[in-house]
Length: 192
Image (tube, rainbow, N blue to C red):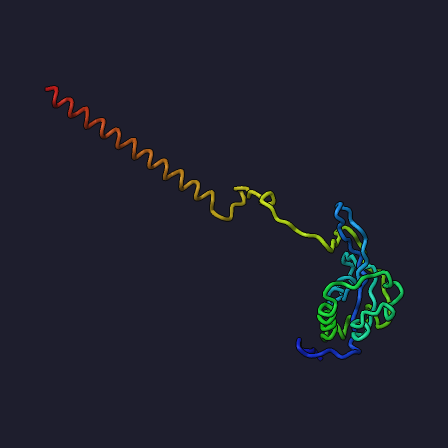
């Protein structure tokens, strides 16, 4: 049975929690290791079980009520050094709802059974998760786009502007030549 967003979850609903290796950036710029306990959605665990790179070292199956209690005593001992993630209740409820879907119920519950711990995922720190990272955008981040991949029609506009400037210069030259010819003809008439 699929639950609606406003519907309360039963205490015995299955949840998956992961122990993720993250980092916090110190004021001096150095990264410090931080282990974070986070709810894992059914689709995330399915990807992890399929061999996708992940920052999760471990995952465990637990009931919604035990997870919501935020009591490390109810978690496996490997989670003792971890910190609970920000927005715990919101993220836990959202992840728990993914486990109520038919696909998760039928195919994914045995990846990490209730009360068990699994740790043979494709753990990688290639893409470090920095928890307190602030992305400050500056003008230096702007990249001038090469004209060969111009999607804004700048090359066409440039050619059009050049053609118009050339036509205007040609018209001006023609007008000057016409005025000079008229002046010469007038001088010739007056000289007679």
